[in-house]
Image 1 (tube, helix red, strand yellow):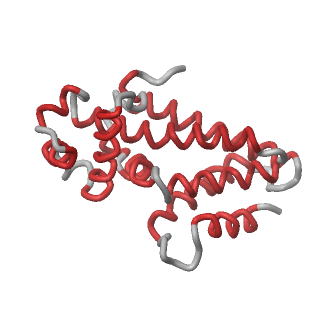
Image 2 (cartoon, rainbow, N blue to C red):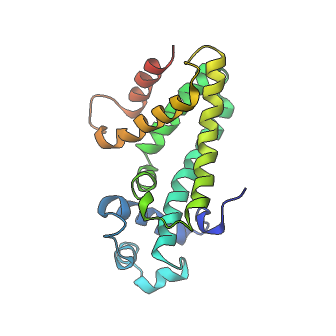
Length: 194
C-alpha cells in the first residue's frame, strides 16, 4: 500500500526548504505555536505564498513527518544491503537510527515523535504506512539475529524497547558530551548483543 500524496516527501527544492525550516520551527516552538507566517518569514516568503506548495499547515506537518521517516528508511535499507552478517545488521540498525535521530534528520524525526497528537485521524494512515515500513526492516533484522542466537527471541518487544530507548536519546544526548553519536552507538550495540 502506497502512502497518499499528502505524505509523500517533498519534491521541489523550494518545497523541500519549506519542510526543513518547518521541521526546525515545529520542533523548537511546537506545532501549535508555530504560525504559517513564522514559516514564511523564515524562508523569505509571504505566508500566503506557502499555500502554493501546501494547502494547510497540517499538510506541512505531515510533509515534515514523512520526510523524516522516509529519509531514515531509505538510509537504513541502503546500509542493511551492505551489512554481511546478522551482527552487522543489528549494529546497522542502531548506527543509522542514532545518526538520523541525532543528526540531519533530528528536527523532522523529533516532530514525528512529539507532534503525533497534532495529526488528524484522516492524515494518520499514510504516516502509519511509512512508520510500518521502517519498523518492518527492524523486525526482519531482529528476527534474523534471534535465529542466530544474538538477541533473545521476543523480538517484537525488543524492537519496541530499542526504538523507545533510542528515541529518548534526543532528550539527554549532547554533541559536546562524553560520547560522539558513533561512540554512543557502539556502546549500545555492545549492550544489546548477547
